[in-house]
Image (cartoon, rainbow, N blue to C red):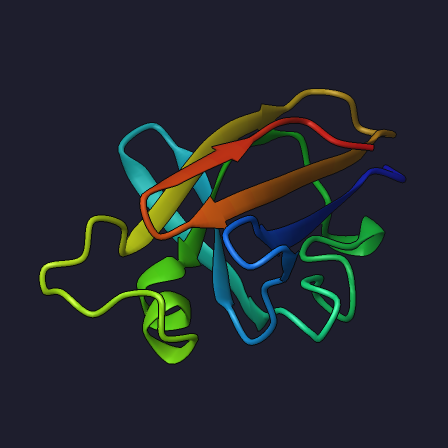
Length: 118
């Protein structure tokens, strides 16, 4: 398989990449969730390497969990507890064993969106 998975986090409130945001990738199998890797975004809002590289890629259902609350607190955008957004989970499927899957997160303190990027 030559597929791989990348992600990118943009802070839409400040108009810049979200640096220092922790991301965890889980593989989903029915009701079971297995942690595969944990990474942090760099100054460009990306991980330094694919979050799931070619050698580890497998089709199936996955979940990226973005630690948005920690990032929003550190950047001074979130002050109240409980936060409106804390952990942001995105569950998605990858069915093509040779594709590049890109799952970006556009984030602010009160909303987010995602899509399948390129």
